Image (cartoon, rainbow, N blue to C red; front, side):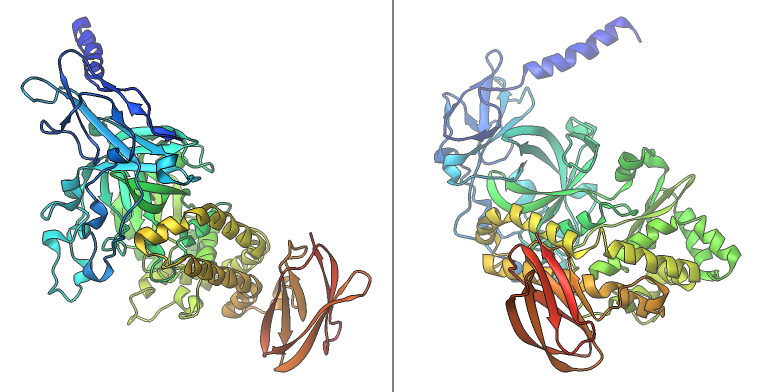
Length: 612
C-alpha cells in the first residue's frame, strides 16, 4: 500500500472526531441538577434533541447551557402511544425520566457535518429515589418505533383485526434485517457509563411482541461504528466482547406468572451443569429517556455465542433450532444425524456407540434433567437449540426458562417421552426422539437416575434454589413499585410476592420428590440407588430458619408432630392429617439451635435438625 494512502486512513478518523460535539459532563449518575455546556469546532451550528431522536436541521439550536432539570425531560410521552395489541394495551398516567441529550454539528447549508453524540444523565434528586441496578439507556428515533408503516413497536399496517390470530399480527411481528432500526445503547454500572455506542435493534421473541414491555435484540455491527459491545457485562463470563445482546422483558413470564424471575433463576441453576446456558443480569431500561421497567440483559444463543465460549469460528458452527432448521452452518449434518437417529436401536452396542460418537451424552443428560427438574411447559417442541462443529459432538443450550416451576397442569414425564403423533405442542414425537433413544439404553437410563440423585443433593438442592430465589428477589424488590406503576405487571407488589411463594413452594416440594418420581418413571426401584427411603426426613439440615419435614405414609391417618430443644423441652406441637404417599410439612421461623422432631405412630419416628 502506498504511503499516501496510509496517511489518508489516519487523517479521516481525526477529521470525524474533530466534528463531534463536546459535552461538559459525561453521561452517568448525578445527585443534583447542573448546567450542561456543548461545544463544537469552527463556525458550525450545534443542534440538539431531548426526546431521544437524532437531531436534524430543524432541531433546537444550542445557544446557551442546558439546565439539567425537569425542563430537560422528554415531552414526547411515547409511553402514551399504543404499542401493543388492544387486549394487552396499558398506559400509566406518568412515568419516571432520565435526561437524554443528542447533539450534532450542522454547517451553513444546514447539512450535518459530524456524527450524533449522545449522553444520558440519571439525576437522583429528579428521580426521587436511588437505583441499585445497572441502567440501560436506549435511544431510537420515534418514527422508527411508532410510525404506522415502518415502526417496529406498533400494530401498524401489519395488524389485521379480522385475523383469528390477530394478536399475532402487527409490525412488531415482522422479522429480518428490514425491521432492524438504528439505536444508541448506553450501559451504566457503578455510577459510570461503561458502554456508549450506536447499534441495531429488533423486536425479540414471540409471545411478548404484542405486549407493551417488549423484548429486544441489540446488534453490534461495523456499519454502526463498532463490531462488538466491549464490556464484561456478566460476572460468570470471562468474555468482554459481545456481538449481540438480548433485553429480555420482566413481563415475559405473563400470564404464567408475574414474578418475572423464572428464566434468571433457571439459568443460574444451569451454571454449574455440563450443558450450555446463558449469562443474564437484571437492569433498568429507559427508552428515549422514559422509564421502561425491569429487564434482563442476556446473551443470545447463536453462532456468535458458541464462538465466544469455545473459540470456534462462527462460520464453522452449525446451530439448529427446534430439532429442524439449521439457523447457521450445515443443514445436511443435522439431517443426516436425525435420519439415522430414527432407525437406531439404542440397546444395540453398535448403535449406542454411534450415538455416543454424535452427542455429548453427559452434557445432554444434564440438559434433559434440568428441563425435567424445572418442569418447562414450553419445551421440548419449542425453545431448543443445539450446536456442533467439525470434531465436536452435538451439545444443547438451555435458554428461555419463563414457563417453568409449575407442573400442576401437565405431566412433565409424559412430556419427556411423548410418542403420540397427534400431539405437536408443547411436546411431540419428533421433539422427544433423542430423549427416548437415550432412555431406551439401560446404561444411560441408570446413569441419568444416578446423575439426578447427585444434582438433587447439590446444584439443584432446595437450599441452593432458595438462595438464588432470595438473591434475585432482593435485587428486584426496590424496583417493583416502579415496574407495577409502569406496566401493571405484576398488578401489585403483593401479587409478585405471592408468585414468588408459589415458585418457592414448587422448588421445595420438587426437592423431595424429584428423585423418587424419576425412578418410578424409569421403572427403577429405590433399592437400585442410594436413595433415602426412610419414613421421616428433614431438609435442609442444617437449615437457616425454615426446615421441611418429609413424612412417607402408606395410608391416610392423623398424626402429631412434636419439636423438642436439645434439653428435651417441648418447643412446638401440632396435629397434621397425612395422606398416602409423600407428605411435606413446613417448619418455619425456628430459632438457632439443635432440635429433635418426633412424629407419633411411626417406628423410629424421631429426626433431628440443626438451625444455624
